[in-house]
Length: 585
Image (cartoon, rainbow, N blue to C red; front, side, top):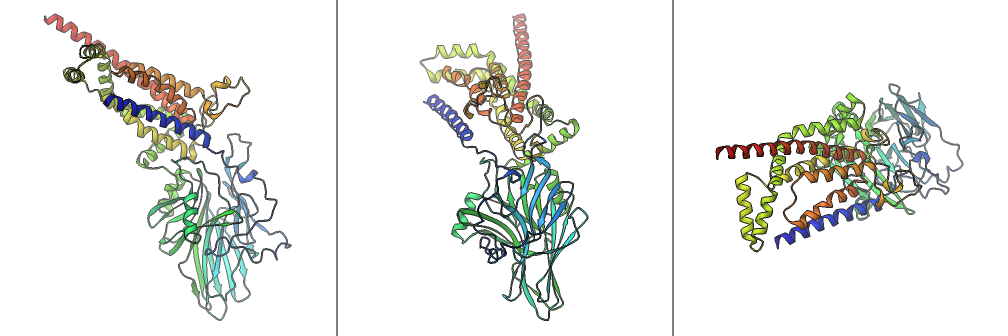
């Protein structure tokens, strides 16, 4: 009965793995096209974003009246890693291209565009502004034309945006940019009037579409932030559901410091306060207008600022808009005090393994210049680290294989007495000092290592478009070759289920060879099931990142060499024992 349950469990597990792999292949969406090459809308927008964070989706009252106005001026952004511009109408950072990253491995492909204007189908931008706190003070809105003093905006060359409301209040935004992806905005209101005024400063990141997400359960995409010292993650799906029950608010929290924004697989747009001690309210929002989703993450003062006559009120915020590079996020965390900023990268539950693995691979890459070779050397280092443990397990497996004839003899002798056969087996294990469960140890060790390395390859941008040798131009993507097209000789685009690349085949062969070195399961039915495991894993890993399949294949080869070496020494030791026993007789 126990054996039947075991076989049923194995069959069910294999069925679940195959079903999940098939589902993953068939439901994985195509990557989101970059706004740089996105088709422009041919119809007017159903509504623009609100100026006040409190109502992120309301239609601009002045939008129709401004339809015939001249095109707005733009402030050029010129830095080593960013190109784009700021729309001076509304003070929106809505045009941003990452110079170091292309859409594909082809250097001639378009560069990745992170931010796009409101009239783009993938509108995505950051903005700074104020709301009136007393209902009397005129504040800038989406149609306000700001005046830029200086430019272009570049590292070490800040630019001041100014606007006078004609009531005695001068609004200013002093913008600066570092050599990477961090913008800093110092919002000021200079009250030259004769009365106290009240305003509410805010900064936000706004996304006027729902992006196509990768859809993998091991990767978070959507709202992300560290608020109150705690990492908070909300997907677009759950955020929309939450907003429907809370009048457009997904979540809000008063906090000192922290950060909040939107994360994609490799890119991040997030706000954080300059002064971590200043209390602010962080809010995530969602509304649907005209069938279009509008998402927003914003920081604002918890209450309006009262500005006496002759006084000045300020609010300093930063906006990160760029690639989630591990060392860069670490430096912002350490230098600028952005709490747990590195957690914008979804290293997952094995964070304690995943991040050290990345550091080790990155160090080897800088030493060698090839991430694929770094993975191979890293695998050797892991095998050396676990060598004593694996050595003990492989010795036990080698002894088990040598005991196979005796085990078969016991099963045949007591085939009608299962209890007796089991007790004889246990006695044999005790006499020969063999642990039948020790063969599982290398696999158990490999599971968290495999998953952690999978995360590194999948979520870190450093692995994106990293080449190996030959036809592998991107270790983070599946091997593009396919057996069913004779590796490119046949002009055919087979379904995803029939994607069978070279490296997956190599992995399957090495797994089969390794299995031959292991002792066969005592039950014939179990042995037949396990014979199909290399084939099953070959199909499963065919759609995994090439770097992971290369790791698994190389690890199998190292294990084969280790097991063969141990098996040879065990046979020699067994023969020496026999010779010694005969000599004593």
